[in-house]
Length: 328
Image (cartoon, rainbow, N blue to C red):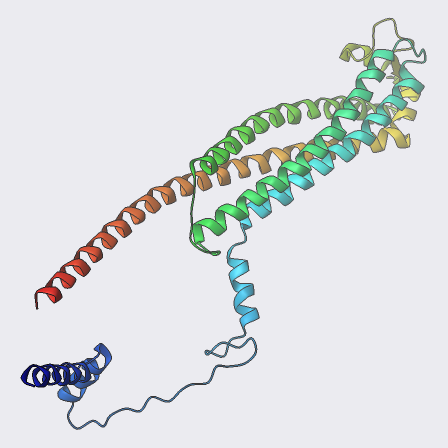
């Protein structure tokens, strides 16, 4: 009987100890009442969840989502993309039409024989095909750079979960930096090349203005003022007539083809300059994004090591508590 009574007493003692176990919140509340004895126990009421897209602060959830999305927009990349698209569109569109008008002017006034400017016609046609390729390539490349800007901005600001970067992602960012640098140098050459027809048309236009100013002066006839296209090297020296003088040159300047081609070449040159500025802007953005990714990867490695050490420390503490409980 005695062992049974002892086991019953031990079970009652264990049950009483289990009933006397105090949780952490109860300990905090007891400490609060011990420090402020005059206070009454607080009663915590259940707060019902709000329906709809309204947060507890009274702000609509849709508005918060929009603010979050706007925070991830790479505005610098967006401006550079718009500038790049505008510059490439102006260069390709205006350049294509201006080249067609230039061929028409040469065939009608400076080289009446088709064989004399056959090579020039083939080169201009090839340049028009190249313009189609440039427009398509930069449309795709601009979208890729804009997408890369969205990815980097969202990743650095950690808008869509935990940020993780890899060596492959940093390598791709570095590749975009190098490719944009090469394209920027190439477009500097395109910008300089597009200024050549502007210079030629400006010389013809200024010569026509001189002829108009000499019409009132009888001592200086306008027939002696000429423009020889052969000296620019775009048509051979045996091309007939090859040059235009006096009233013929003035009539050329008054044609619609000359007026449109001259101004379209100016706009195309401006578009090439805008594209150069956009690529320089892209280069600065990509360089900064690559630096952000590099620093973020180092911070990520540091946080991983720190989290691992904290986990190991918690494991050690839990094992030590288990051993202490086993001894007691």
